[in-house]
Amino acid sequence: MLLASLKKVNFTEKQTQEFFKRIEKLDSELKPKFGKMNVNQMVCHCSDFFRMTGGTKKALEYRAIDPKEIILLARSGKTTPAPRGFGQIEGNGTLPTNLENDKKILKKHILQFSQFGKDKKFAEHPYFGIISRERWIELANYHLNHHLKQFGV
Image (cartoon, rainbow, N blue to C red; front, side, top):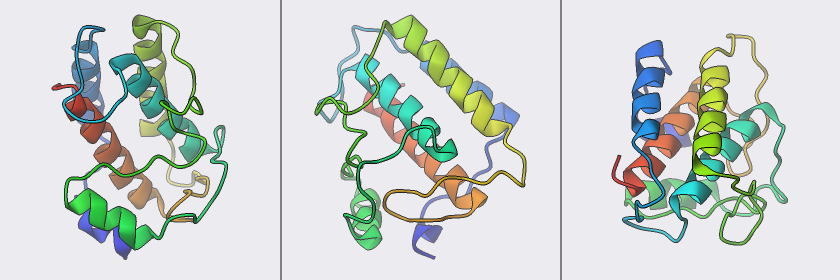
């Protein structure tokens, strides 16, 4: 499987709490170590990822980029392009309100995601198509870790 290269980790209660601690360390003065988003845009971008898992936010196009290319970029530590409809810089993502509110919303989405049952039917991923629950968990971990590291937390 293409996503097998991503570290396999379950979204556990402990991990959820660790993410919450890291999110609480975010403040509006933090500058990105890479990329163009500010911290508030990044928080909204991460919330959009979780909205995507359940289908409440959809990309504007699907299969526009070869999944193998995405994996190669991720493996090499390079930034992968956001699916069309999710780009904060382009103005396609959920607009930030204020950082504290947006952090609260992100934590709510993480908690909901961590509580999805084994029978949860996930939405189609814009690059990878229909993927398993385990693959969504891997992507969620990878994506959230990537962006929290972007701001040094």
